[in-house]
Image (cartoon, rainbow, N blue to C red):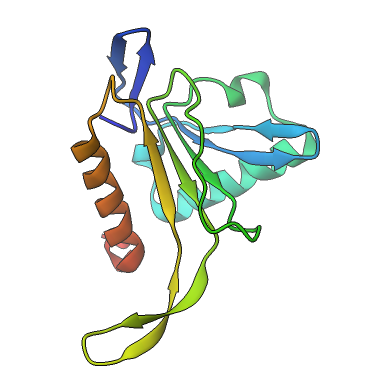
Length: 154
């Protein structure tokens, strides 16, 4: 499944754990530190680990093994005036989620337009491991969780 697979040629390996790569921009390039066993973390613990890994990356203090073995990456350019982009999959991963900036837009609520924060996400998926319908279902689940974040606390 998308978060825990990797591809070696035409061989797909399914992992029992998610090693979530977080793309971090540095002055001299991009680095992708890895949150190990991400599926076992609650939202607060995940946020703490992501922030700590980003801090260590910017300080140049990541251990070499902190940037290997990811099974899926999130790349966020929301801090720039970029609404959407297509991220390139980091082999041997089989997917990467690209997140653009949030912005206020008028959204129809059934009776009137109301201001809502919106953002665009793009999922790149390796079709050797996952087909478009599975990728679409994954994006739909992410969308639902972002629109109803209380579900993340259950």
